Image (cartoon, rainbow, N blue to C red; front, side, top):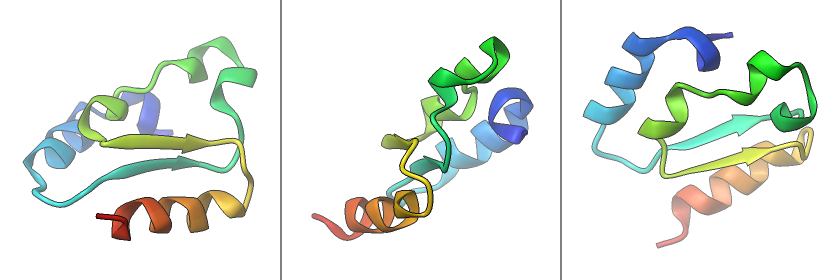
Length: 66
């Protein structure tokens, strides 16, 4: 996916002035080796990974939490 390959997405995230949470439904650290590297993580305030559909709720909570 774009997480592992997109420098242009990383540039866009860095330009964005709001809070950014990277979300993965699966645990990317428990999958194939190439998935452990996230280019876009450097443009995020945090990463939520491995909580299936709950990952979205956790990310929203993180974004609205001041």
